[in-house]
Amino acid sequence: MQNAWAALCLRVQPADGDLTAALHSVFRLPDVLTAIAPLPAVLMLDSPDVLTESLLESMPAARVMFAIQASAMANDAQRNRLLALQASGYRILIDGPLPEGVKQHPEMRAVARDFSNEAPLREVLPLMFGPHLAHGVNSAARRAQCARVGYEWFSGDFPLHPEPSSEPNDGSSRKRLMTLLGLLARDAETRDIETLLKQDPALSYHLLKLANSAAFAHSVPITSFGQAISVLGRRQLQRWLQLLLYARQQPDGLANPLLPVAALRAAQMEALCKLDGGERDDQDLAFMTGVFSLLDLLFAMPMEEIVGTLNLPSLAGDALLTRSGRFGDMLSLTEARSATPAMLEQARIAPQAWWTTQLAAYHWAIQVSRNL
Image (cartoon, rainbow, N blue to C red):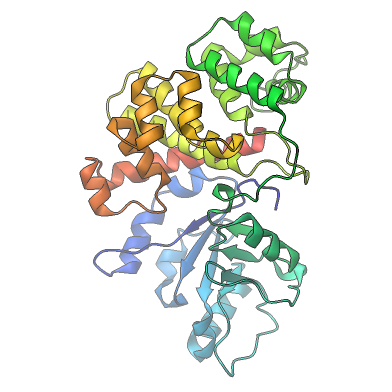
């Protein structure tokens, strides 16, 4: 509920239909759980039958929880299997409404629901049995509805569909931010960036907070922009400032939900560029393209105006405006809910390589959320 990463939902759909083998391939190495540490994975399944003892050995109860379709509760064997899993320490979410005639089990009260096509009912969920997961939450309004009845974890496209802001448009603040973005895009002098930072108290606060965070572990407090720039380094300063634009608090006091999405896109764009043989400068530009892909939502203005103002290189500009060119293909992949085999083949990316870039991106984005 704090607009930060809480878990990674996984739904594995093998092409050959052998789900057990596919899950073994996902979990047999510690990569996925290491990448998202310390967060858990929520494995979404139709039934618990696929969860063999050998498979569970690679799924520690402290790190993996299961969202199981509610239809399993109508089957005595599957219900008993779920109760046994819960008794052994696994958290179980019952996904969807219970079948007709099936009562809620008193020991299994945590729920998951798909709200892509319907709003939540009015009854309030018991928080002590959570966390309850709302998925398919594709608007800020739907997220608010789910939160009111007790859902605590939210999955969906709601960050990309915010409610219209009722706050007055601060033209001067937006102009400063656009100027800062322009400085970052053309690798301006540090002193020019520092001068502009001093005019923006919120951004300055977040930068100093970051420089003093556990991520950099300095024994002496960082109290000036010059120190912060020195601590972060020029390249990292640019990257963090790009993301810090999303770190401002919302009118309701919550962090901007676009921040985790921007961090994820940026990290995966960089990983894909590196995979494609891009040099360091190209990787930096790919990272920037991922961050900037959400500026139209952040500033509530057309992307054409943003790209025109920033005078970005054509590689980034074409990607942001028309999803064309090498970076455009990469950006389309990072935006997709799931990359199909056809999409990966067109982009000339092997499935294993795609998986690796996803894990790298999630790992980095989770750390960002914990440090900003």
